[in-house]
Length: 113
Length: 109
Image 1: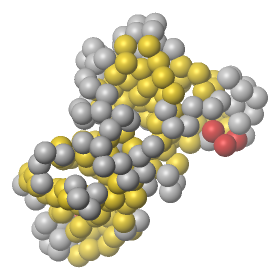
Image 2 (image 1 turned 90 degrees about the vertical axis):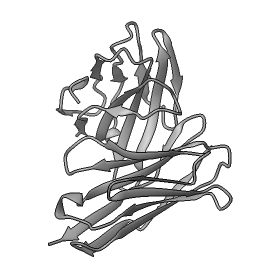
Image 3 (image 1 turned 180 degrees about the vertical axis):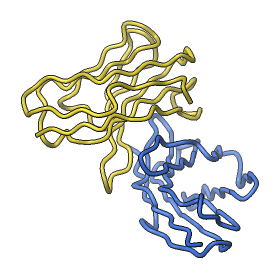
């Protein structure tokens, strides 16, 4: 689905650096989500947003910051990256928070050295 | 919060056989149960979903069953093909979507 795009696809950075992952959707979905995917844990919700300027914590929010100034964009920032944040990050969007299917982006593979 | 457990973690079947993946959830108020397929290096994609007012749903070779009393739901794939090889995730949703840890399905030709 080209309707949701993530950038960059791959990123290598060092501990302590700030890094921002971008997510853009063209469906005008109200809800957007950030997940991290780690072996043995499946997908875990970091943050979600119900609309522009409305964000809320998910299951594993520590160390992450989000913003949503426009409906179509939902960037995720690691303010001071740590090795434990090495993961694959997926952005998703949906019409409904809990009762509708979520559409995922292609993911960002982030490595923190 | 909701806790979703998924079994088995790996599953290998011969082409043409059936595959069954099972998930249990902890919150009886969960009311939406999607299944996602993720091929290697790709995004998760919804393959089927079921809501709490339905016991079973089928789409060609894929079916999902839900037992609300026992709080478990299952994915059934019949006549498996090599292209069914992927990681499958279940999820349960009440206030937030919680995913199982995934099942790596391998279909041997």
